[in-house]
Length: 127
View 1 (spheres, one colour):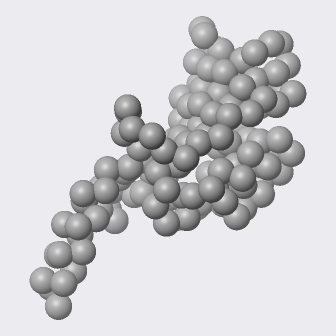
View 2 (cartoon, rainbow, N blue to C red; view 1 turned 45 degrees about the vertical axis):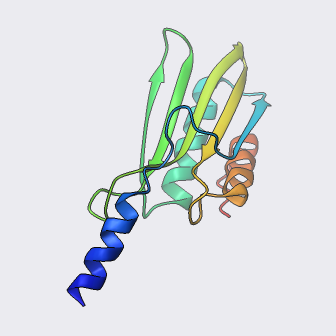
């Protein structure tokens, strides 16, 4: 039994999540809210809809951008990043959002649709 568990852990460790330079499912859209509000809505989605995962992020006022990451907890195996949401200001009260998923498990096209609805509406919309 221990060998089966160890084999699964080793196999999953090969899944590295979202890596720079690779192509993943993503969706870009504009919203009529500030970049800070779009960032807060993306964080809310992570906390409300993906509570078994780790949601983290950074907000940069100097260049009016933000990034929210949802990762699988390291204690489960790798801590890989499965959802990334980039937010940037396009005006005083508008922002561009680019959401990307690693296409593993619940991090698929339906998750992209859910994060879009959450950010557009301001209410968590779980898949």
